[in-house]
Image 1 (cartoon, rainbow, N blue to C red):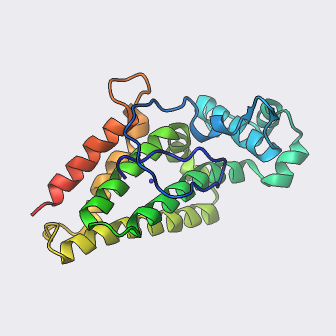
Image 2: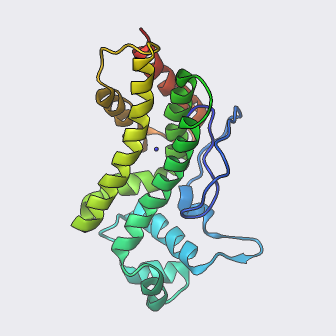
Length: 232
């Protein structure tokens, strides 16, 4: 997975130049990162992005295990040879769907954490940003948490290591605030992380783009809950 933050609109694995704040209201895209890779009016997207867009849509609609490689390549308008050239397997596609979201969130968390601002501001921005970026890529998150167990053991291990790095950087902000007397030291930082990310991981089960709250409003509420729980 800051406040007033917005998700990057780059392709798979792309980086946004610096974390930015946005106070405007907006709704999440229907198919998250996969939809933004589908191409532009100037022509079709590159083959890897078309494959990712097709896989994201089909995995979301049908489920990972009920989607065949043939269906993915037909939806992307490419051959099986192209898929195996760029990804190697359907398993690799599933891994990359989550990987691109986690890379985006890690880059943004690192940017917030490295800012010269009070730790309370940095943590609040980071806490809200992971909510916004998850909602903006809700299909990616939904697919992953529904299908992670279908990754190979090696890829599951890699994903856990990547998520652990993200959680540890977030936890370090909590610990920094506790050492400085900004946050109540009574709650272990690891438990604070679990508390916030438990809410983030459940977004895909209840958030709807046509609901009453925008992504930013949901993010602000959850970040405020976290900060209130940490204040001395």
